[in-house]
Length: 112
Length: 113
Image (cartoon, rainbow over all chains, first blue to last red; front, side, top):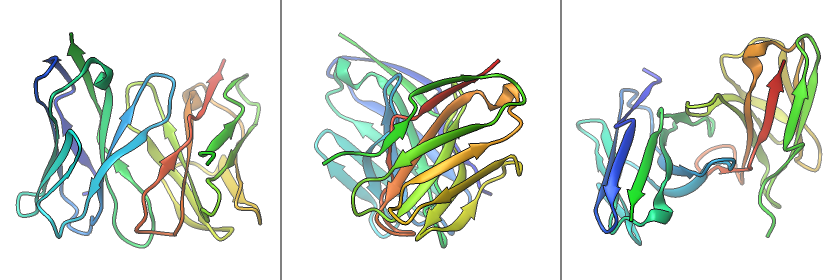
């Protein structure tokens, strides 16, 4: 019940296209769902996050869609750029601590 | 503003040795968490400390220990190192115990030979 399942494992998108990464969870106690971007040799950087009381959140080219009944959430990167090429992790947390359960990651390559 | 800083950036140790990793949180952040990231996987939670007390512990053996100091910096200690402990160790800080975003440092790359 503590798992967060992420797909796809890798993704190739053309410059200007839309990148979509999906995650699913089982623990209904989760109440915070962030997405992190990680470049090689760096730590994860917080991109955008959502709570279950909203179905969508947009920040610039990044949008989270959240489906509480299906226990799924996804990251959409609009107008994908080569600089977006990185590994993306979804995560979830809930309860008395900030403990994050991470997905397995998606390696995104945006081709010029 | 300085982000989360970790030291050292790289470390090579031999099996059986012990290691101490250090973390300075963002100014004003009272919570520090430690994560282990094995190559090709997502980070795995090790510990959370808040106001100098352990608030959460992941599924790691007792060889792993940590502490938080009055200035909110933290140390992660690993004893009797195994080859499988080779990983990127990440520190994250947040203002509160829960409900606030985690900000990660760039990690310490530990190699055990």
